[in-house]
Image (cartoon, rainbow, N blue to C red; front, side, top):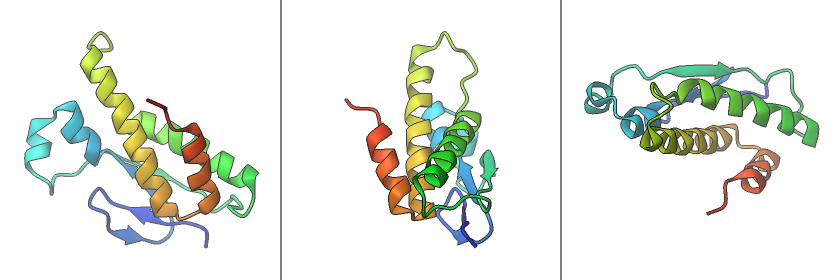
Length: 119
């Protein structure tokens, strides 16, 4: 099956890929959760058993799903807070990187590298 799941603490399971906001919790300042690494982090499950990761089209579709999931778990309460917006962007990028590593597709990794923010 073309799928895997990972938790905020890096444990791997089969069936789905879950984007987690373990990074966002520390970055976005939820001190109570950051102090307790066992606390449940927000997570979004991204299924991709329907995609063929041997093709560019399959990887592009999965990347789009991962981007949407990262946006769901890396939220900002006040969009006027520029520091929080910067933290959200960092959270989303780190969540994407973790998800791509968990999937283990070289094509998906190449897609991440071409779309990664430069700077």
